[in-house]
Amino acid sequence: MNAVVVRTRAVIGLAVALASAGVALSTTAANAATIETIAKQAILLDLTSNTVLFEKNADERMAPSSMSKIMTAYLVFEAIKGGRLTLESTLPVTERAWRMQGSKMFVELHNNIKVDDLLKGVIIQSGNDACIVLAEGLSGSESAFAAQATKRAKELGLTGTNLTNATGWPDPNHYMTARDLAILAEHLIKDFPEYYHYYSTREFKYHGITQGNRNPLLYRGMNVDGMKTGHTDAGGYGLTASGEREGRRLLLVVNGLPSMQARADESARLIEWGFREFATYALFKTGETIEQVPVWLGEQDTVPVSVPKDLNVTMARADRVGMKVSLVSNAPVAAPIKKGDVVGKVLITAPGFPGKEVPVVAAQDVEKLGFVGRAFAAAKYLVFGAKS
Image (cartoon, rainbow, N blue to C red; front, side):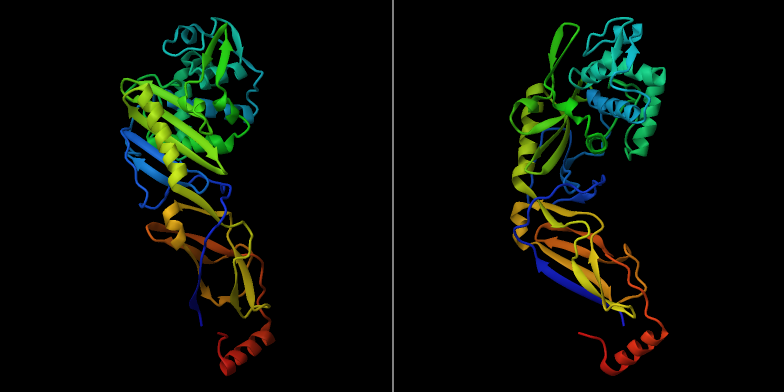
């Protein structure tokens, strides 16, 4: 009695929607829009629909340099959320932290500094000294902190990451991938929105010294609001950047660029391309009835179906005209049915688009008919056949 039921309709002129929850980087957008980059490693995502727009050597191990400070900040935010720290907590400056070279916040030896200031030192000034103060304050030593950071990275799905310090200081065993940095950055944006504002702050004054945020895209009027630069001889010039425009948030990771100017120009070019060539379309809201699917031997003849979370799709703007959305189900679905049971799937297709499918679920319970009702339904089916 079960048959595959397909209902298809073209979807034209859909509005841009806000992102659904979760982190998934497996969906790739259409190949119709293409671009090249001089970056050695790169990945560009649309976080609104968790779609990869472009990637190059995204799973190649690389020196993340100061971009790995995103993990340092992430662990501090977790400690605050878990009650171990507050923004007003103070941490002592050891001689090791004070002597740390490279980019500096210029902490004072033996001083006790507020976590709020240390976070600004890490995020805005890229202070290696501030990173070590936080690492030692949380874990007792930088090496213990790095071990904790690596463990947490694995838990977050960063499969190509190993961290040996809190700063991104050059070390052949301190590495990440562009994809891992993107996953981490997305987690930080979504897990700690209350702290994301640090990344758009353009300058911070500490110890009488004012330093500007090193993210060049903050100054270009592109709606970019984060996140972190990096540079070492081994890694080249890199940037993890994110920005939001008309409800869409893009996230870019580039590394291995030859100069600060190339980092600024190439990052801007890739992000502008992502906003210009692609669009994100809202198909269905969580709980919205998509269709009524026939039910077999249920107390009602049909069950409304919906998607378990907002369904948005990103594709090249040129592909939108041919977009089609199909509901596929094995109908009639046998009762009893519980709300949330998967009863089919939605397929999204378009010319040049690789396709996407998501499950659809029952929007309400449907109880099974009693014995008399089942007997009557069976007799009716034998006499009149299935409804068309």
